[in-house]
Image 1 (cartoon, rainbow, N blue to C red):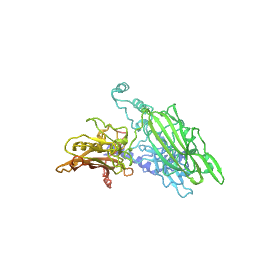
Image 2: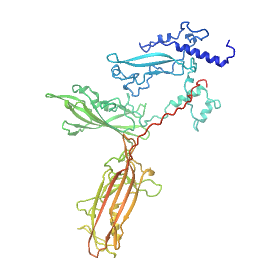
Image 3: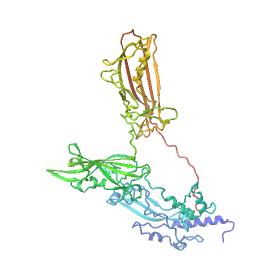
Length: 605
């Protein structure tokens, strides 16, 4: 019987609140003995002493029904374990960490790991550090927590309802299959499970960008430095990720023969899987071995036999020969994501007690099969000292056409000691990024109004005879522009020719100074390249934003027939940094949006 005047819903809510209050009063016992010591915690959920007021519901005991099985084993769950087969700093739940690692932790990054928060009773693991012990130790506690919310799950008989399942999206390929497996447009639980199983199966076996390269036992190891300069051998090599790293290794010279990372076999013995999870293996072939002596002289061996580090006693000193100093991988792949070839090059050296710790260098490069590597001027930004990539567009809408010689795409006059423009005609100097350049030469000739013949004197390399002003002007322009001056410059060092809209057009400007009774001849070509720092402040990339070619003409007085004139021709290239200073940014103040979570009434609605 309920009190008169109270609605039924209010009575139900009061009963639930009283039940939750009774559960909250019973605090579960905490265990620190191990992962299986949970009897004390479970025992606290029994019948408590009769201290509750009359009419209050009894706390749920073992006779209330079976408790829901947690979906995730919280004792084995670790959200901060990010590195495979390696201990993560301050991750107290990392199974790869030992007691030595725990002794140097400053705190636990994830102190509490809980199970499903929708249950009324859930498991929880509490991690902490005991700094009073010597050395400091990790403390592990497995407890049972009571959910104070009135909307919690006490008993469940359908586990798939605890998680959201993504249904398969109908399309033109699977519509008929969905119609056969469904009753109209309502899918049942079995259909959901079957669809989820199909989605988990990979569509094709191939390597994708950034995926670790698998070997017959684990993965291809590529040593690198992580938190310090010391080498870490458990770093995997990723597909299509070119790397070049240097790291140091602390070694005991007396035990150099036992250290695997100093031996060639450690890098050449693994066999790479052609595709992930396949039985086809690609052996690593040693292509070259170079021996470096103590005085830095290099000698290449004719054979490629695997050598082992050997300890040699030279008087009062100990030397370790055939030690790996540099390793270079060269992997060939197909457009289908398969590894077809693996080459390896070594630089071996002799290590003495003077050079301990040892510095090693590791490189890995990927080359696509049946393709020639294209030299770049940067990736992506330009590198100082490399030539500018340039080309021209034959017609509107087409791509950029470039010459195969990247040092001949954008050029200027080539200066010589004689400064004769006709002595080395056709020889040009490439424009290098970041280099301010200037060159020039002299052209000796005579200018008159009447037309005459143009004669090249091979002995003095000069234009002789009666020459009109227009012919000399055309000759000077051809010397300044060269053959096939480009119309566009690539913004980055790795810009593709087909991405025409990304290329920067060259703006051509002509300046002239007119005088009465004079001949207008081009005298200088000034190229100005404006560039900016693009991207992150930690690793800015050089990007070209504007290129201007200014042709400056000067007035030369007309000379009488037979009088010789000397014309000075010069070219100049300047690079201007137009990067804007970085502005300090601040986060916007947080906006309070008081809304209920989307799963507030789950699983009731």
